[in-house]
Length: 130
Ligand SMILES: [Zn+2]
Image (tube, rainbow, N blue to C red; front, side, top):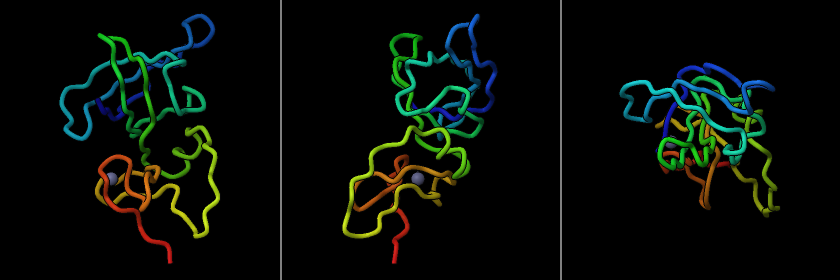
């Protein structure tokens, strides 16, 4: 299940527990807003829950009503994507490689996946480096 964050309602601290509560909408279809609480431990590739921001797209794995895993897939701008994503080891390659790019189809910044690199959301090709 993919959702886009519309609003960050609450970032739980010491007393509220280590959670973040979001207003989200199904992505890319839209539909009614839902309120979702995600435990910090369920965030698979995000440095810290307070770095989640409106416009970001998450991939969710649910178990009943509970969010088991949440992965950040895309963000409205490069800076917020880079700040929120936990750095991954980068394997050396003989040629320059696209790590993230602004997908024209999704209108979002996303990590490039695969070789040749494509958008992690829709599979559109990443721009070529020349
Ligand atoms: Zn895309």
